[in-house]
Image (cartoon, rainbow over the protein chains, first blue to last red):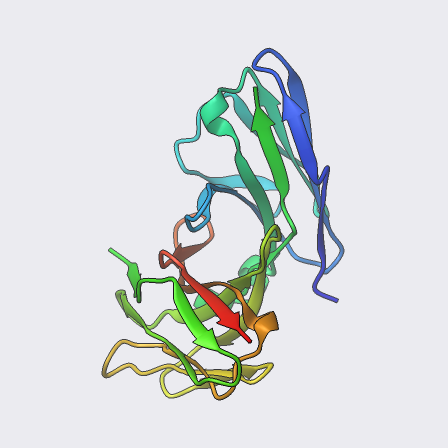
Length: 117
Length: 114
């Protein structure tokens, strides 16, 4: 089973709202990722968690706040977003250091379609 | 730095036509190479991968061979179907200080018509 689940599927929020995106995997993966994808563009990496610790932050604005409460769950807390933050937010997971080197394969969830009004 | 170049789309083919989507890369060392597919309104699905030179990845009739001498990983399928209509992303993977990073190409939209 290579399933990564994400909730909600769609989210509409105002610029003053606080909301959270959720991602879950039960594949024993120890690396989890958040990506942002705009229409007709490839995904852009936002954050990487390795063994529940934040290991990469690609200079993402602080209105996006990631959290990894355990090895199976990854959250993205949203606050005071801008309309330009509207996008598809993808979560991915991989074995991480267990796999070794560059052969580690990332598996993606179906995404959350976020609209900021 | 690392980069991936894909052929421009959109590509429009008739059903049962032969498909080639070109992908070349620039990277230090020997990255792993991937093709992901994204159907409308969905996330990315791993289509196939290759982890070393001369490896051939294959899945669902799609194939790609890791060519180190030409730094290429072209995607091919002998006979496309309408259901193959999607966006295809070529990507390379390298371990960095904090974890594994994928570098994607710009994506190639494929439309297959009856």
